[in-house]
Length: 202
Image: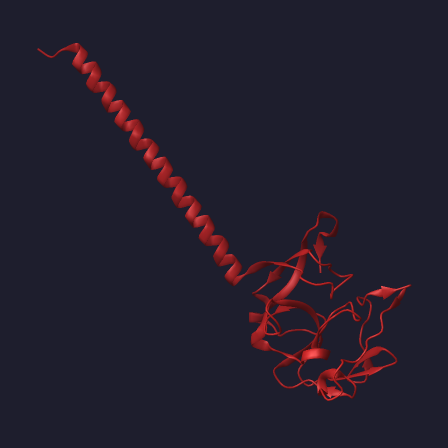
């Protein structure tokens, strides 16, 4: 004859075992969900949108040192780089940089009275940092022998892009080290997400 106490004990052990298996399944579900979420974040950063911290003051006042922006890595798979785009690129120093595209392949760039000209026409300067209400002057690069210093008219080579910071008097850019090739461009900056007071599109 079965002992009721043994039946109760076996029933309790069974419920305890089921609870243990249920907890294990729950933990496994959490672990899988976390792994999928982490993988999705890395995939999004690798393929679509990547956060970027502004490393220098060269793009003030559009963005400032320490601001965080989002980089669109998909757009240039479907369209060409446009003049005026703000892009992140590599190849000129130990960290990626963010500047504005002011010259496209084949463009002829020149300086006159502190203003940039593209193909003989004044380049837009509404985004150039202002001093006492006037745009900062755009000065040539420091090396007179460098063709990209803009001491003389310069034709942007095929497959290359000429970059400048909006903070024209405090920007190490193409005037110093030349153009950026297409394969060096990581993506287009399109949105400031930090600090809160700066949140908005670019």
